Image 1 (cartoon, rainbow, N blue to C red):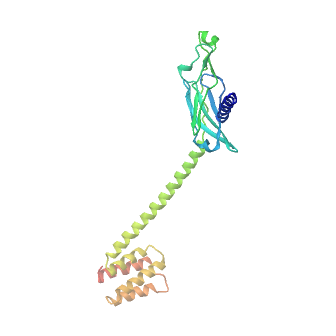
Image 2: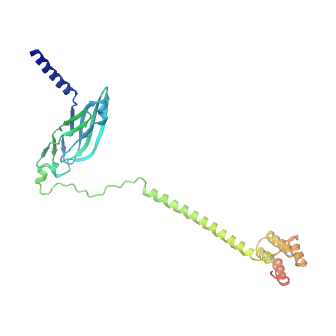
Image 3: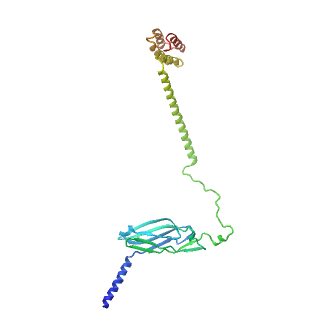
Amino acid sequence: MRAAAAIAVLAVVLAADAASAAAPIASTRLAPARALFGDAIRATVTVDVDRGAASRVRALPSFGPLDLLAGPVRTRVDRGDRSTLSFSWRVACLSEECVPEGRSRKIVLPPVRLVGPAVAVKASWPTLTVVSRVSAKDAAAARPPFRLETQLPRPAYRVSPSGLALALDLLAGALVVVAALLAGRELRRRRRRREEERLAALSPLERALLLAREAEQRDAVDRRKALGLLAHVLGGRDESLAGTAAELAWSPERPSPEQVESLIGEVEREVGPS
């Protein structure tokens, strides 16, 4: 009977030890554990769990009077059938709730909970000490030793302003030149189109007389071409004037502007402009 009772007690102890050995243990860390008001503090909790359940373990922290700046950052290291998980946050004392009343203040944060398959752990944080940034001497001074910035910081530019201004001026100049070229090209095109429309509205004889008059101020080659066109147009209407125009066009001597003008006047009197 006593042997049976002893075996039962031993089984209970072994079961408790096994459960205790299987239960994950979490560790926590605050860096730094003594910080000035407003300083960033890294809070880290680490736990060793079964590898198969590692991806489903979550950390549920509560930082009390501290403000959360960033996190969590999760890291995982696998070793055999176990995994070591770490969760870290950046926190800071930024509110009146954690301002030191004197030189320093002790803050006890609420425990962090780790939950997941076969994981239910609570871990306490180390005591945090928040130290005032103002010394007793500073607080007692009639004029607090504030630092006054009297000069603006020197500006920094990704691109030099003078270099950028020069590049923009060159680009603007290039655009003006291109615009002028395009405008001149368009004006010439419109002038040619108006001239073509004006010539198209004239009769063949009017067009030949106009071209001959314009050729008076050009070189002899243009005058010969204009007289040749006039001779062609006059053919069939006035053979005498057509012959005179052809003779001037192909004469050994260059036809003078006076000869061209004289012939134009004679054609206008004898044949008319149409």
